Length: 143
Image (tube, rainbow, N blue to C red; front, top):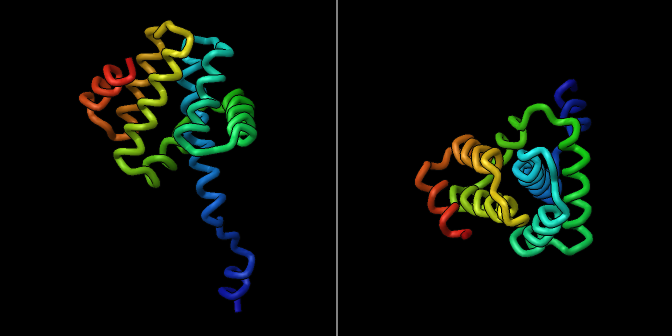
């Protein structure tokens, strides 16, 4: 009887919820890269929105909403562990490389790659279990 009640009240996320959570995790990591130089320019935000449209295949409205949501959440985030874990559990190596490419494009959006932005991308590469070679290739390929 207890198991039936647990099963009844247990919320199981739908596939759409899982995709939304992963997209939000990616958005927060991109905002983190953008903010690593302690300022987020409008060019970087526009770049992030454009990447959501082209890479995540989202509409402009959803891309803007995701960007705003990530900005709001990022203000209160003191640890990125749960977002990185979500990506590591659900993304393939190729998807992770694509995310690092996106991070480089965000860092380049204002035509200045700050040393803190580069460092943040390097750390994200490591935390996503990618090689230093992947970091270097991504940096070169997005120039």
